[in-house]
Each structure stands twice: as C-alpha cells, then as structure tokens.
Amino acid sequence: MLERNIRINKLQNVIAIRKALSSRSGLAGLQGEHAGGRLAKTGKLVECISIDELLEETQVKAIDVLKMDIEGSEAEALSNQSFLSNLREAIIECHGKENESKVISILHQNGFTIREIHGLMVRFILNAMRHPLSLLHLETQAGWSGIRHLVARLRGRKGSRIAQDSQGTTIRLLHATRNGTFS
Image 1: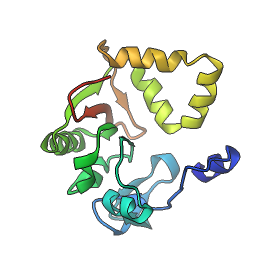
Image 2 (image 1 turned 45 degrees about the vertical axis):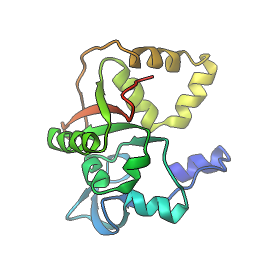
Image 3 (image 1 turned 120 degrees about the vertical axis):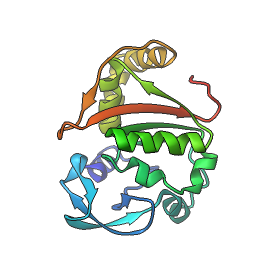
Image 4 (image 1 turned 180 degrees about the vertical axis):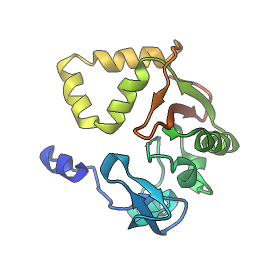
C-alpha cells in the first residue's frame, strides 16, 4: 500500500523499506498482514532492523519528529537506541499496558516529558497516522480545519475515550517532547 501511494503521488522524498522495526537486526515472525501485522515468535519470517541501523543505512543524521505505530512492538523498537538523544518530539501509539509502561520508562530515561492525547481527537490522529495522504487530500479541501482543531486540542483540552485494536488491546496515544513544551 505504501509503495502504491508513493507511486500514485509521485513522492520523491519517501523511501519504502520492507523491514520490521525491532531493537536489533535479524529475523522475526510476523503474524497478520499489512496494518494489523505483529512481530511474534511464529509466523512468516521477516527481516528486522533497529532504528539506529536504519538511520545509518539511509544516512539520516537525526529525526525531528517520530511517528510510531508498530502494533505493540514500540518498546522493543525504542530499547537501547542512541537516536533518542537527538530526537525532539514523538507521537507513539502504544498497544497494551505493559508495552506502554516500558515506552514511558524509556522516554523518561531519555529526558522526555510525556502526556497522553485524550478525547475525540484520538480517532482523528489514529486515522491520520494510518492514512496520511488521504488526510492531506481532505484537509486541503477543508481549509485545514481538522489540523487547526487538533493543534488547539493538543494545547490543553482533555476528553475521555479509550481506543482498542482489533484484538481488544487498549491503545493509548502518547505525545513526548524533549523540552516539556507541547506546542
């Protein structure tokens, strides 16, 4: 799907890499396909790469904003990664309470301030993360009203909505910044 969107939209600054993110390179099992796939001990074997190795391989020096949604492997992918020292901001979709606790611990250890994104905007953000090109198309037609509303919500208002994935695992959206300022 990503490669198709890159081709259709004639994107020159996007590289599709057919590897799963993990804390280290190697092979892992993949259960499920496409957007719902999860790393596991069994399943179709896929090649894995760490974020540090990916940045080195692609010659990217630093990440300003990281958007991560890797179906419960977020803590694994963030473990023991040096890129975190140069990361400014992250939006991470955490699947499961244990995974979320590990992610929060890793981010705190690396100097981040974290808050959960609450409310009705959770669904908007999750859809934006899953379908960014569709969001851009709709937002340009709507005069960027959704994005403006999202930014206003991120600046302080809260709600209460718990999201779940297809297996019933709780999903929480975390916003982490290095300087403690949420713009």
